[in-house]
Length: 314
Figure 1: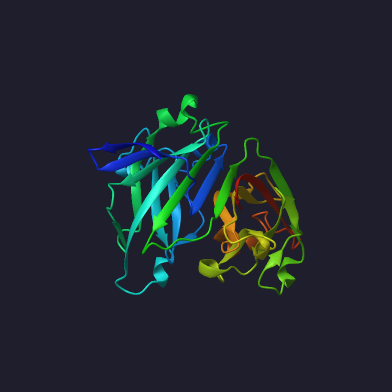
Figure 2: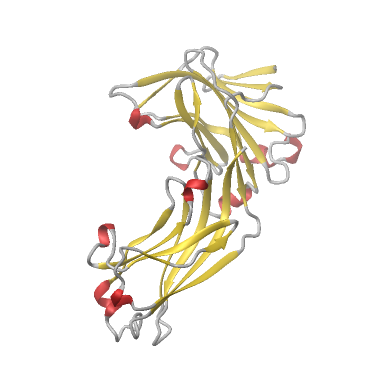
C-alpha cells in the first residue's frame, strides 16, 4: 500500500493498494449502458462478512438525493436486516475499492483510521456520495474504466471476522436482440385452470413463458385479466444471478388495430421470477364481443422481450 492521502473536508482516507478486496467484487461490463437503460441505482448480490450479510450499492451517475452530481456514488448496505432482532445495530469498519486496470492495483476509500460506521434500521447504507468524479472515472489514463468495464470491491470487518472470496459480474449487453413470441388462447370460456401458460420460448439463453390468469390474480382477482412474463425454471439460476429484461405484453385486437399493451423493465431472478400486471384489462371489457380482444372464444397475446443485462457469479 502506498500514498495515503487524507481529505480533511470529510475525513476520508484515499489510498492505493496492490491487494485485492477479500470479501466481494463487482465487475460491470458495458458500464455506459447502465445510464442508457435508466439504471440509476444498482444493488449487488448478497455476500457475508463478520457473520452478517451485505451488498454493494452503486449509483453510476451519482446519488441525486445526496447532490452527488458529476460523481459516482458507492455504498455498503446491510442485507437481510428484517431477520435481525429488534433494536439491532452493527458497527463495522469497511473499505471500498475501484480497480486501476492500467497498473493492476486499487484505489481504496475508507473512513479515518479506526472510525467505525454504525448500521441500524434507520441507516442501512454507509459509504461515499462522491466516491469518484465521472471525469476521473472516464479518463482512460486513470485505468478505472477500460473497454467500458470497471471493477469495484469491498472489505468489511465486524469483530475481525472474514469470509472467503466471492463475487459477481454484471454484463450489460451492447446490441441487445428483441425476441418475440405469440400465444394463441382458444376456448377461453372453458379454461378451468388458474393460470394458462404459453409454450416456452428462448431469450438470451433463458426460457420464458407468457402467463395468463383468465380470472385474474392478486389485486385483479375476479375483476381483471392478469398477464405476466415469467422465467420457466428459475430454480436453476444461482442465488445471485439476475436478468434485466425490458418487455412488452400485447393483447391483439382482432377487429381493429387498437391493440392493448403494457411495457416495463424488471430484474428477474430465482426469487423474483414473474412480473406483469394483475389489472391488465377488466374482464367485462375483454369479454365484450364488440371490443375485439376475444373473438370466437379466442384471443392472441404477443410478448416482446429484450435482455439488457445479466448478473452471473464470478
